[in-house]
Image (cartoon, rainbow, N blue to C red; front, top):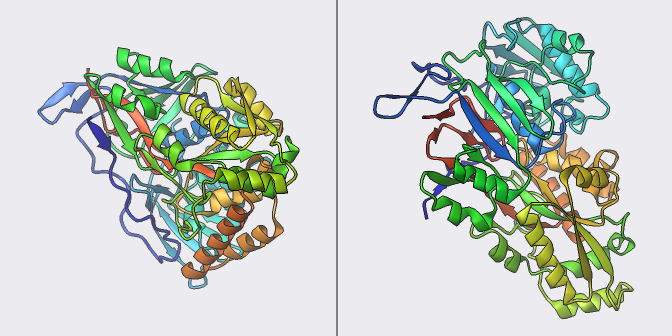
Length: 527
């Protein structure tokens, strides 16, 4: 089996205490141009002008301040770049800022920008665009991510230098600046289209710009002619095609209708990899899949004792063995084992059906109860996880009824807190534990990741962690939050998994980070 493992994950580091950073992430200029020639390693070969990438879902929102689903968030970096970013190894590196200095009190950050930056429409990037971007990030009420900018007091500067003043010193400042909502956007474009992205998308200075979005069918990205990296991107068009059904997406890859297919079912990986001309690439990832139990939709799930009983009735090792085929691992926390501050000291869940039945009886459910699990239609992994839970929980008297919904209907019901039980997915977008922790604890935004759970104690610990500059003390606070969530059975994880991508052997240069961001500027398809 020609299983290709993407570049090994290096230590994930937070650089917020570093007083400066030399170098930048600009690659050396190559003697190539988009859609003309590709380096084949043996002279040059003619390259295709379009790469077709098949994904399960259409983006729901190309507004980086409010985008929430990974089909949207993973595209942002190709469209809008920020001061810093994350590389393929999960480390924070310079992006539009070449270097920076931090004042002794940690409140004033001075970034030195790449000179001559332009948006994809050819207009100059100005200080007004940076101010506009950070103002939207901070003040857009419906944003899940506004906390990343709430600490910003002022933004000043010119086309070469940007100075950000903070209200409080924050250990996650650089990580926050790497998030997609901090990527600089054209103020003039936003105002021209009516000061909303409801029917549009941002103009940024990434490698690509959005050329066309046909909802539920495809998004076409076109090469930015004003991109600051000379000779990049190497391919004129990257087209994201929506193919919800896993089998259909896999067959389209095998037939050549797609060049890359994401979310290949783990059960199909070996078969797909055996096809001549196609390879499976496994990317180390912070991606986790969760058992989302909504206590507002099913009163039994509102009881901590019931949730604890269900964990006793869940054979997580069997789930790993039967669904991941070697592409993942058990995680004891809502955080991925690959994330900073992961609490590896938490105990594994004990699998004991007799204890589970006793615990259910003590919680007032001696005969078990019924629960409906909703899975996305055509998602082979989610359907398999539903079937495994259905079988395992039947042994402790809990009847799991499985229903399938299309993605749009599932999302709508989830956001309205109508689903009792579902498979949750999360991939961190930055190298810091605050993102997912904030998402769970900010009840007004996500209803406790759609579980209807909230905790004043955990929120107080999170507030302390947001100000704690001592790495050891900060890690201890996050580990305590994870312990609370584990004890109260909030968002238990099925597993942490690699992300596997099927791609034609004609494709080179495509990669993604442990946080899901696609790197497209190097991607080439030889004809």
